[in-house]
Each structure stands twice: as structure tokens, then as C-alpha cells.
Image 1 (cartoon, rainbow, N blue to C red):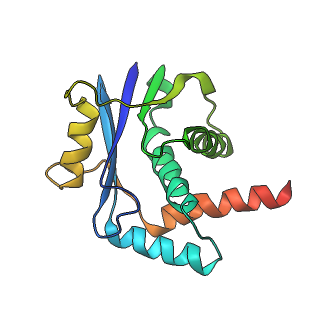
Image 2: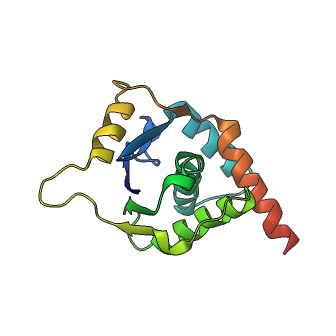
Length: 161
């Protein structure tokens, strides 16, 4: 099954929740509450992490939690480009998270491109927006612990290399 992935409420906007959703055939959405984002960013900055890459890192972790339980049913994943010029880094981060969770996926099935074309809203957008506005319940609400656990394990792996 092919799915589209969209985000509503930017990760870097700490005044609002962020929802990531996929749709087409099946749908799923995760929610990262604004307070969780603020607390996570504070923790990362305390550990010396700075710059815009923090947001791309959190976006990759969000994608991981959104997709990890559904990979067996997915043949193709198109992620809406949110951070122009950084698709390869985000994809690499996502693949690394999946590998560390013992989830194997062929890199070729994950694509990044604009999914909003011709004024048409993909179903993933509608699910992400409804979850962001809390009109629809998220399948999972992420915590600071969820986000930092994936970042810590990635840092630990890098120190071993």
C-alpha cells in the first residue's frame, strides 16, 4: 500500500501542537503536544544541541513513531517536503532509527516531495490537520521520554563508531 505523510503545526512552532499523519487505504496520526516540544528542546539545548538541525531531528523521530508499526503493510511512502534541502538527512535519520529498532525497510520506498498540488489536499493533510486541531484523536500522543529516548540511543550509537 502506498501512503502519503503530512505534518500540521510545524515542529519549530512551540506555541502549537504538531501532528504527523499518513493516509490512503489506512490512516494513522501521532501528536506532539506543544509543551512536550518545549520541554524536549530545553533538554536538548541543555545538552549542547543548537541550531535548526534540532527540528529536523525531532521531525525524523516523529516519522519513526508514525510509521514503525505499519511498515509491514507499506510498499511506498511519500513524505511531504517540510525542510527543503534536508530530505536526505531526514531520511537517513529515519532509516537509522528503524534499523536500531530492528525494523528493516528498503530505502527506495521512502520519497520526499510536495504532496499539495493543484489546490488538492491529500487525505494525509486532512487527518494531520484534524488531529492537530484535536477534532480527531491521535493514535499516539508522544511524550518527552519518547522523543529523547530515540535521540539518546542515536547519540549512544554514534559514540560507539
